[in-house]
Length: 439
Image (cartoon, rainbow, N blue to C red; front, side, top):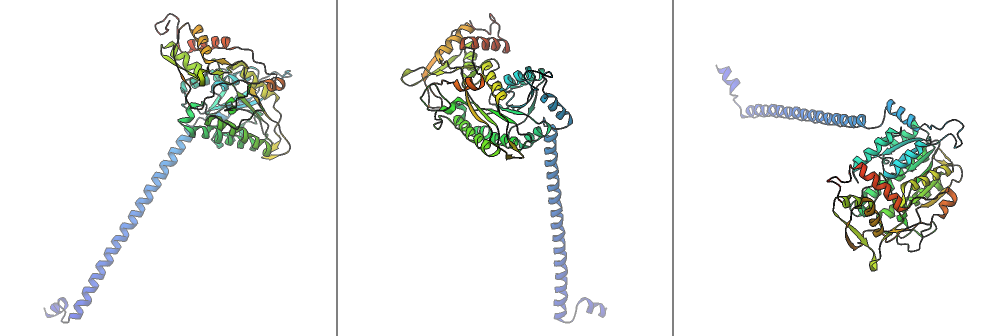
């Protein structure tokens, strides 16, 4: 028992301190070992969580990629088939062009795509189907194009990968660039959308074109809005355009400067078209003639703006078929780009044309024409024009387009609005004499 007692209870205090210290060290070691183990487990769990999240991100990204409306062998076959010209051999108009139309599901884009396809050119469209106005109208236009053998890719011109892929699949001879954020007043609500589409999107497209082999010739939509506060009429391509009245106009003016730069540095053939108030069937719902028609039929009042000193606003309304002729004439006369591999080999054409009707009509006269064809009297609220970027009048000098493109508008506003009203009543299901049709 003595031995046991000595073992259990040492006779000297030093021994007790040493053994107690050893016990504490062992406890601390176990504690630290346990903490290290927990730390390692925590790291492991963090790593597993990060891996899971990364995997989910990959799956989401992959799902979006595979769910996207472009890519794959079937998609490439559709692109090639749509881009193939269909003019008969030995045609007087040549072998036909292969045209990439941006904004193809838009108003002008749809009409131009149909006209190109009708005469035997190859056409591939691209459109992002944004919600600036009713996307269902754009989808209906896409269906119309599809019924005529025109394939439209759902994508954004800011997507450089998509554009590069399109040029990789098809050596487009021409690009008709009509995609843009339109509208003067909306720029005050969403200015970033104009920079995104009209400047960044344009640059992305030009980059794809200058890197393409062969480089395509480019025809693109500028705007009569670039004339801004210019008070010299009719507006000529030689007039000053350094006083824009709206952000929309400023982005279009910037586009003219940007395209000139790509023409100068990279040898891209560029033709800019300044459209003057385009109207007609399948038009844009944000345009005054369109919203007037809708409100008149629904018995709602329309707002008619008036300029300073009670002067009526006037616009150079241009029917869509005339605009299409100007676009196709520009494509047909566009000289070739001269760059290869992004390097300029020689000077390339740079042109700008007005496309208008040369016969401005006041807004009150427009309303009278609509009343006649709708057979309904409008309820009008006449107010002073607010400072929202609109200009009091537009009037195109088209002598340059007439001389170089053979451009000659033939549809006056009365005839054109009659065609628009006929389309509108049919598309939106109005029947004269029905309860939905106000007399």
